[in-house]
Length: 84
Image 1 (cartoon, rainbow, N blue to C red):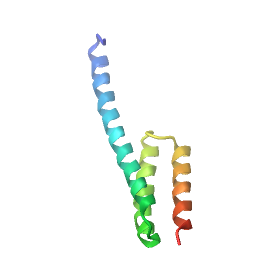
Image 2: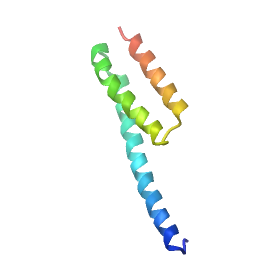
Image 3: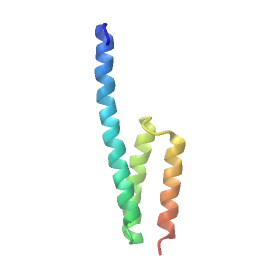
Image 4: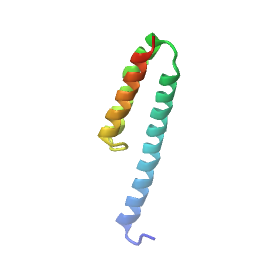
């Protein structure tokens, strides 16, 4: 257990950040899942920019790696373009 005041504060801060990151990550995953389940291409194109923005924010905050963000975005775009 932490003994120093600053170390205790750091533990509190990291727990808060962890909860926030989990929330943003889960929200983004749900948005991706909803987007990929959309059968209509026009509707999917409309929500695509919001989902890509969410993914970019996760990468910016170092919740996910920037290369993983690129891979996710690439896969989403390919799936949406394949819709007819």
